[in-house]
Length: 271
Image (cartoon, rainbow, N blue to C red; front, side):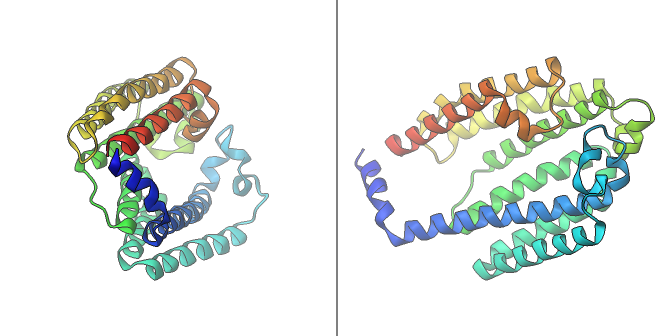
């Protein structure tokens, strides 16, 4: 408890505030980079997006934003973000540059390679974890990386499954090349592998990593979150827009908030 009080009073330390500022700046920079990558991705997929019942309404695919404007905006967003990353810290700049290169390769080529397409998306989430750890100079448990990989694979395969359910006939291949190679039974098997893997990885992380052992109390929230997401994917045919599921499904959103409160309480009281 004494350590918790020291942690609380530590927020008056300029060093702590500097770490919080650096973390917040890194978060904003990755948001900016993601926006630039989305513009590039939409430029590459302009024709296939027009074959999708929802994505055809995107600004570039619908013609509301012309390609020249999108190219200029993407270049500015990516260039400035990476430059600011190097200004903050050399290691952070290299991590951000790696992320940009990987995502550009994904937009132009890797998204057309079955399974690798989802694997690259998962790698992008891991790079975000690496960036967050590097900017505050703390070691990260390998189990957290593994958990992040499997969790991202789950969301990615669920997204592909939704695309196969929503699209019909020639529109499947017109929208995404890899959808020719995927099938719903295959994706269901892949999801059946990554979901328990995510749960096991998180449980091991909570039980063995450099965190209080009481963190094991958060495992039930992970179990419910995974099962709830599976329910929405299979029973409600959702999964195409993970961000909407996380923000609009009240049971899932409530579960995330409870996980955050419990995790924060454990770290504050027992660290």
